[in-house]
Length: 166
Image 1 (cartoon, rainbow, N blue to C red):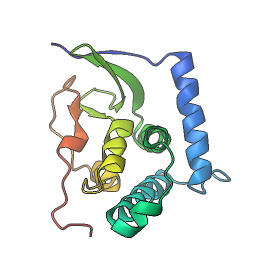
Image 2 (image 1 turned 90 degrees about the vertical axis):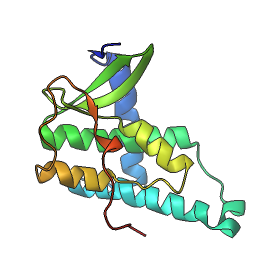
Image 3 (image 1 turned 120 degrees about the vertical axis):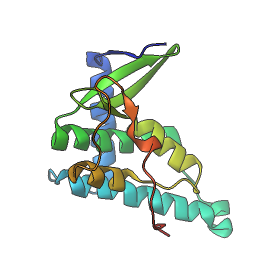
């Protein structure tokens, strides 16, 4: 089935703005407008800490976690907004196979990043490598190119570390 998209509604944009605001407070970034690289690094650092706590069997027993869906929505909103700020991308609702998924898409629609869904997978499974910063740096360096226009290629499916982070 062909991929279609629609713009986010005013209500959806407002929800993302609320999630972003709360996440920026939790990340300690609400009092200033950080450079996009700083905000994305803060998101990845938060996820790394979350995962480390859940890999420790003793800590795991005593952790009282917030709802991972809410956390992923906040962190994903922050990360997505940095893609918008740095690269001129935009939020869209991607419609495919009877699903609607929120994504940040390149202007030519060659690339899509599904930040909230990717980060939710990272929060759910501490073995999933959070590569948000790596993907961001690859985009900054121009290492992602040659993808078909209107292809909506899911960037995070192809981002892997050569040398493990841990």
